[in-house]
Image (cartoon, rainbow, N blue to C red; front, top):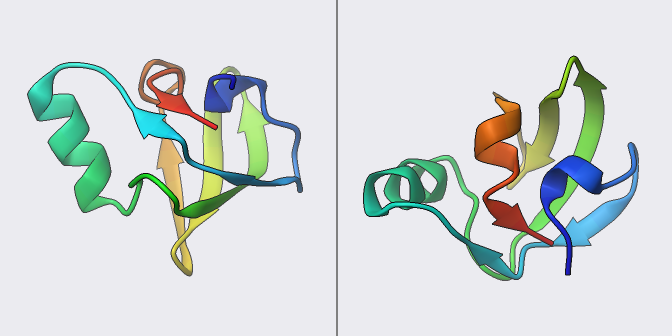
Length: 70
């Protein structure tokens, strides 16, 4: 298990859990970051990441990505 920030570009990972405070978890879940979902890092720039999750492309900050464990 590792944070999403350490995932390699193009590699398909499965989300194990989403951490953080309740409001942060709710926000990430509304974007599709839920346990069991498949997530692929498209690119990482300056710590921020662009990922494909549930047929959508989403950009999230390094802080948010570090709360997602894959």
